[in-house]
Image 1 (cartoon, rainbow, N blue to C red):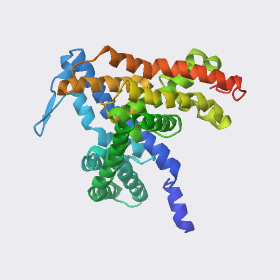
Image 2 (cartoon, rainbow, N blue to C red):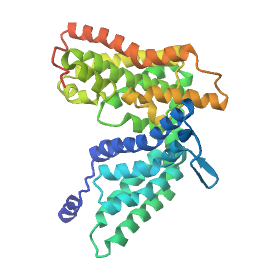
Image 3 (cartoon, rainbow, N blue to C red):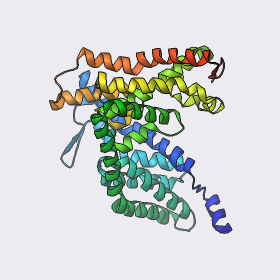
Image 4 (cartoon, helix red, strand yellow):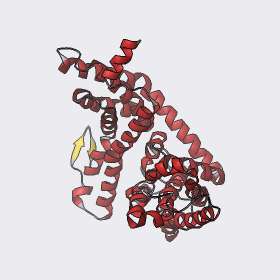
Length: 362
């Protein structure tokens, strides 16, 4: 047992919740952002601004026409797998082999491909790391093991994982349509909290395929956390903190939350209020990429995802046009309400003596 433990240590194979549930999951979201999400944004810009270089077909593969953004979107699986391998400190031959693994697991996982990629890429990467540089024919052995195990697992478990993820997402979305008030609160609070915790709310939403009304609630919760912490900590952090949290990430407050969890009260209550307003009043739906549901105002990806969903719905004929109520709902839910509510709630928390100046200093 001791020798096996020393082998794992030498190979930097750390079997832990942090390594797989935080590092790998967070990296997967970045890979998804750099492929599927950025591709969607490029497509939207190309169509809306009538930029032919971005909206015209640049490649036709297997009868499928691709734009620049379409090519980026098609690389979601490889990008996620490589990002996971990078987070696991995979050596070059393992990292490059994960391109094939990511493509296979994402394709076989169907709509729930991101969850399949997460599981399969982690196992394939760790197995590849285990054999890396252990033989004199490493150039053959390492890619063969990584790809072989990755493809085998993709064939065996990716469809089941993908289906499970989509069924869970479908249940959440169905429940939100059925009970928009209650589920608006639950989804907004849970996904918002996940955004601030050192895990990836974006990856969770992507893995579950969380779109529609539930996606709108998730967006509300994430925006409440990011904008909320940004405005609540303005006295402590100034403009720099406002920007870094408002369009960056509220995860920056995690250290302060550990020291004083009560600073989390105002943004979390704000998310519990804006979530049902999004679902019941404005019927805000995220019909863009599921990953955008868990991004909030980070790089304005969440609002851009809603906008791209509107455009897609108009193109499909399921939406006549973008109304003033659509814009009002998006602006209020994304920025205005989180800011106002959190400021009022934060003042009440400070008045109660639970939070003092400097508690949210970055």
